[in-house]
Length: 278
Image (cartoon, rainbow, N blue to C red; front, side, top):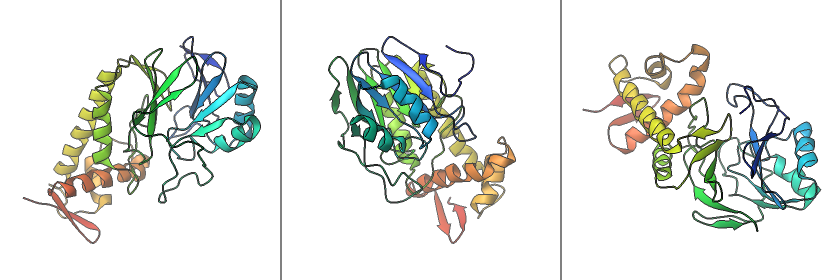
């Protein structure tokens, strides 16, 4: 494994998988969005990434005329917009679920095939099994490479960071349920949408579940300071361990935690204020 992820550089991760990272590093994207090229002869590309011409040129230089399938984990704008240019250049089949109506998503995404949970994408010499994992996005999919037991997780599981859950398309209840679904998969590594390969994937899923439930408790505890409280007030306590410049992002996940607690009858909203119920 390289010590540093460099955008545009091809990394051979396994005999079947190469990674090329887009030049879009940032707070939300880490080193950048990973595109994965799967296969030896006919190729599949998982997450073509943002609409950045240099990134699309880099990918085309690698896949040439052998690209047959373009698979998107979800339609956030750092993951799927590149599908349109790559399809135009190669004629590859675009696979993924349609763009949700709400949220800042990729309006250009036009899948040729809409897979369901459990579907198998037969790519000749290899197969990709579809796992529907709503939570970060309602249309989020993971893909399991049977040959090497690698799960491509997009933003469902990220390396080096936790995932932001932004309502209304993001849903904390669905996200926790989707993390639990990973525990039954026969997988040996995770290839995330941002960062490096993750070993011990089941341990990572358990860690993320525990982290979310611990954060949920800090949200509940924050009501000791503000009850009722606004999202802005509650985040100052519940995310006191998070740098202040990240609090606007943290507010999204806190809001999703509150919506989960509301469904469970533990909190109630009135106007912009939330109250903890006895």
